[in-house]
Amino acid sequence: MKAVVSVALLFATLVLSSEAVQVQDGEYFFSAESVKVLQGLLDSSSTTQQKSPRLATTSYASVCANPTLPQEFVPLCNQSGSSMVFSRLAAVPMDVCEICAFAACTGC
Image (cartoon, rainbow, N blue to C red; front, side, top):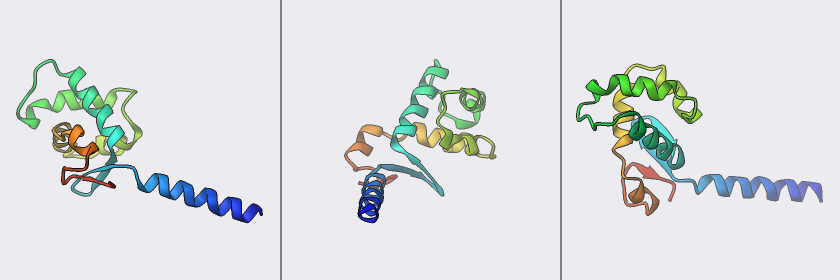
């Protein structure tokens, strides 16, 4: 009986985790909820929208230092080119991800 309950619990966990919407940028995959948090942090850290990601390096560095940054992004902060990934993630329209109409969003 314990084995049946364990298998059912494992199956339920797999089903729930497989239904999570993922946002992909190149080789990186992030949960949609984490990307929403990142977008909120980026919006709050920059009062003016900068068009060039190279000009926004300071903004991304401050986001990486923010303790509320989801743990998914911490390894990315330590890599070169992270500002480009952050700028692309900031541009992902999350409302479109929720209805799975955007190519970068998977798991629908």
